[in-house]
Length: 355
Image (cartoon, rainbow, N blue to C red):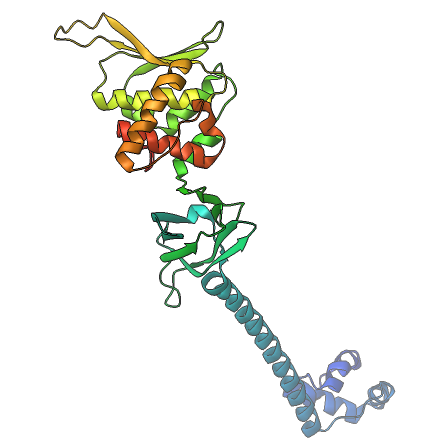
């Protein structure tokens, strides 16, 4: 049979020939050339290789393939195990461990005191959340409510809780610890409205943004319709005036009275909180206006004692009026009592959420 491979070609093929990487036809061609060419045979011997038996080459190639397959399987198994561990850790975090309770993630639906026990009913603020591990920790007269916030699952399908907290020796109850939300203090349940208003307290009535903030918390823009607001800060009595373009309803006037009293309490130097409205009467002419409202001295001497007396009579309480309405901003409990007093008389829903 004709051997058509030159010495140069054969010597280029010798490394692959030694490793057994040539196809059958090429290997046979090299074998024929080596059998007839002593120079190429010597070159093969100089490369430190002998003509490998086909069976040994097959075994070596098969071994390498098995090693490669084994390594690939190990790599795949390691990747799968790592992914499984990460997914398991994530699912455990989301559905079992969760995160510490945040006050904004729950709603308090009921607060009641029976004897020396505070009863709280809580529900999740969102449908995707559930809670577990509810417990109360006591320290230095402060009771803190804790829980874990997880995603809803068959394991934890609800976040509702009915808690009973002994009040003996307790001055405050907090949701989520003292960095969370105060829910009870000094004998009264604290509403979110009281906390918002206390946070809006301002030193000067000359700050229109502070007064606007109080109005927004009470939702005056939504509930009173069209009105304007003016300030008097150049002389005593320092204060502000709401002015209505239309005659307000009885319910709106009650809300304005609450706003007047609350601004007197919450703004340190405010001495007058007034409003101007068209005069009532049968005439459609609204050009006549009436200036009414609250002066600080009159509130402290007459209005506040009368409101407290009215509250006590309606609720069987024995509260004493404070010397000044501004004293009701000393603590959340004091401001909550003021809201309860105002709501009892004016019926504006201040003890629920400002209406």
